[in-house]
Image (tube, rainbow, N blue to C red):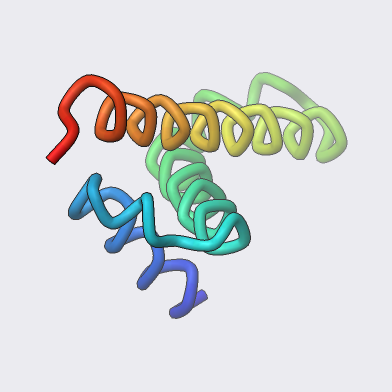
Length: 82
């Protein structure tokens, strides 16, 4: 959990740092962000019912966060290069 928190701070704290991260680290950062979102909004996911559907919801959030990081990386590299 500490490793995921550390990579999350690297990825979301300084967008230029994403270009120097390994894919596994980006995945850790996205998963940590998804977990944080899940914890902050857990009442909203209770309506999904059983744990299988809740797990699918959490996986969906993690995929969306991974795409969000990819979008940040594209913006940093192509739109605002150094």
